[in-house]
Image (tube, rainbow, N blue to C red; front, side):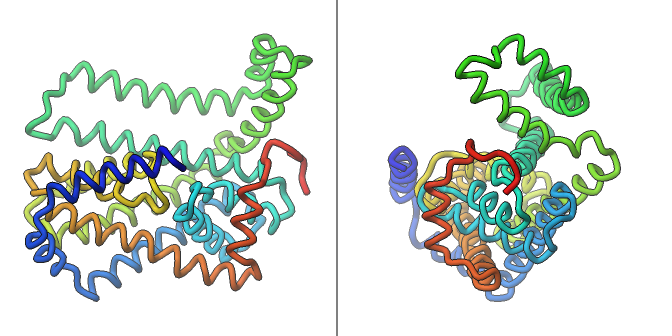
Length: 326
């Protein structure tokens, strides 16, 4: 936790140093109850779509409501110390459908990999549009090529799992300590990528993943139109990419400071002052925190779970043991 807390503290200190409190206060007036409710509805819809995607990759075993509530519970756990959301929702869902948490975790990894790919695509598309960016076309093509190669490699591995495992066993001997630990985990990870070899199911899964991103982008665009109506649509795509990367940086619980700092940096490229950008970041982050808190707590109640017990069991859970079905 310490590196994240230090990172958040430094960024918060920088933001406080540069902020103009009168400008911040005036900018926050752009946030009305109506705007907050719209943003809340869009965030809720994004969780619902992400739940539908998760249900597809889990072979339709859990119910739609269980997917929705478990997704929000995971995001709620991410707001707490240690950011155990992905592991937490894997443990919860594993118990609901009688599967190993490690198996469920592999589906979450694939989801996050595609989130990263979409983030990189947004940045690759929008960075060359920045007037202040000295961006060589050759670098642009290299970045695009790396992303494309990564996607092709994932599909190849998913379609040739047997050959890949044979190659891996030649590199890592199965009878060694490393081999006994690593190889079973890789096999389970590949099992979570099985959907990549099923075109129809993959198309449905990807549709709901993209629908989630449409909601996230719409959330940002709606907020941006209230705060910075002069900015073009693609500026929101760039900011969405920077914000997604910022959320992955080690931080204090709930990403306090880091998320707001990412918005300040992103909008700085468009000439928006730090105080106004910070106000926007505070509003967007508040919605991103409140939404999973509300639905996550409801989910724990509906599923008969206790947040404290789930957090404790998740913190002590060893996903590397018991990979078989429960």
